Each structure stands twice: as C-alpha cells, then as structure tokens.
Length: 227
Image: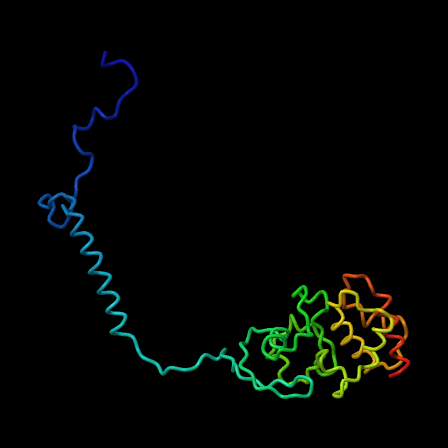
C-alpha cells in the first residue's frame, strides 16, 4: 500500500525538530529557555528601571532662568465711564456689561440675551454703540464709555430722546429701553436730522419684546426736532 497514493515528502526526514539553534559555539550552545521570574521580581524591576530613568532626566537636565508668561495680562485698568475715572481690578475675560453692572453699580445697562443679539446692553464707546455683553472690558479701557445713566444732564434734566420716548409711550416693560435710549442718542449725535430710514436702521440692533418699535421710532424723530 506504500506504493500507492500521492508522494509524502515528510518520509525523507527523521522525526524531531526541523531546525536547531546554531551559534558561534556550534552544537555546544544551550537551547533558550524562558526565565523563571516571579511576579514580585518583575514588578520590582519595572519600578527600579522607571526610577533610574526619571533620576537621569533630572540629573542631566539644565536649569534656565524663570521668566514671566508673555500672555499674562495686567488686571488693574483705568476705565472712564460717564465722565468719571475708575481704577478697577478686572480679569482679562470679564465683559464690559459685568464690569458696569457689578463693579460700578450702574444697573441701567441690562443683560438680556448675553449673546450680542437683543441690544439691551447697548452702551457708547468713543461715541459708537457697542454691545457690552460681548465686549471685553480690557478692550475699551482707553475709550470714553457712556451708559444710560450718563445721558441725562447732571441736574437731572432728561435728554430730548428720553422725554420723547416718554411722550410717545415707547417704554412698555422697559427692559429694552436703556439700549434704545443709548442707540437713539448716538444716532442724533452723529446725524442730528436723520431720515426715517436712517433712524430705523440705527435702531434695528435693539429688539423690543413688547413690539413698540413704532413708538420708539416716533420718539427718535420727535427728539430730532429738539436736538
């Protein structure tokens, strides 16, 4: 029966390992055997090697002179609001609305949406209206800030815009009114005799949840006659 069937090449080789380890010593080299290391000895070796590496990094490292972070920001700033100069300790990430309301106590500036969309926090910086809820205080520390508290005269006489808004029943709930007043005054300071379209465009950044847009618009046009 051995003469039948496909040829099996394994019959030409003796049983046993197909290869053997060969080294410089020839057949005298001892076959490799795994080390009989306990778990305790293994962990001890890992800890010791880590300690050696860490110590080498410390010993061969070079020291350098300490220096201040270039990104550090001076917290103490001088802020001018409604003609008064204030020396304040303000974090670099604080918004102008927070500084005005909670550090200076000028709560006429409202924080509505806190996303620069509703205009309740509108103030003037250098004569231009800005949303104070999205403006960092440090960015306007060199500007003249005017809030709604700085619109009326020092003796308490209302600005023509404020009086016109009262006459035209502009304020309803009143939450948006400070921003409306500041936006209207800024417009009339630059354009004393605006057209209706100019007034509408200048006031478009202030949302009124009560829908009294026409009342505010008529107030702006009435105040323009007295400025």
